[in-house]
Length: 390
Ligand SMILES: *Cc1c(COP(=O)(O)O)cnc(C)c1O
Image 1 (cartoon, rainbow, N blue to C red):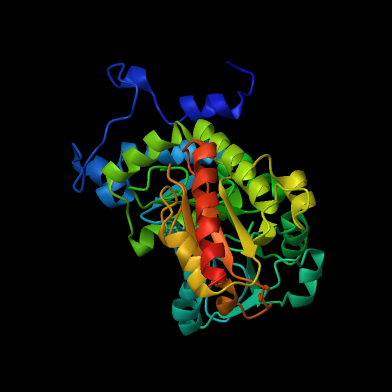
Image 2 (tube, rainbow, N blue to C red):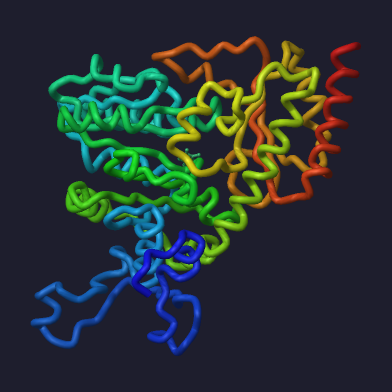
């Protein structure tokens, strides 16, 4: 086929080659540490595709090829968690004396990595207001080597003007990274927005079943060599069984994500009309402050969004959440199940303040029947109101 195929086709066909695998549809799981070479020459030339297990096996390469193609990047690398994808990408492109600009809404453990590791190795870490677009120019220094973005924030859902940020960063020679976990490559193409490196917590939607930790780093051609060199030097590797499950999960990403989106918007709209709710944080809603950017840069939404409740006691919130039947309480997201957690993102911020009028709840819309989910929330609000009236 010469015509470029649509993403739903790519997702099914990429990263596999059945006719070189006995006709079997899925790439096999290759377990390896030692790889043997037939001659001294072959051993020493290091030209073989598979050299050593830590560098990946054909299972890893199949998944990496699939992710690179879907992200529209040059090539991809697998890491054993989403956080390690964030940390390896940063380590690869920063050195002592450099200045890092990172969004104040960044995933909290990425922030902890910056504070715990990067600052100790002489990198100056500066957090910026996610609302800055081209105005980020005022924060750029001669030694700014990376501008790190994440949109929307995974607790407060601010969008970022990534094309405007990338333009400024590139004019100053900085590398632009984007944590693209929320939208996945299906609903956001970071390289089209100007990013040089796209990071996925594949743990979330790519794996999709809450049972594997996995990360990916996809780069453009210019940042590839430095990235793979550092990834290899640091020595992390993902196990082939987990990589197999990630590639298997990827095949259904489109059907799952479209359903997560539909149910998420359905719940968000229902919540918007509830008297207990002050505000819904969901960039796909026209009332959201990030909606225009979302409409311009993204082609869809996942199932993760938030709400701000009207001021109410912690006990009333607990009464609502503790007895929910379908919404589980737990960290992470992207699986088939619905989730809810109370969150306090204000505590992490330094460049901006986040002090909403009431408690923040973060929801993940799973694949259950949306009517059943609403009934569960309705009963929860009854408990909240009963506790608040005591
Ligand atoms: C979960 C998450 C990560 C980290 O992924 P893990 O696989 O849990 O390490 C990174 N970024 C974002 C936006 C996330 O939601």
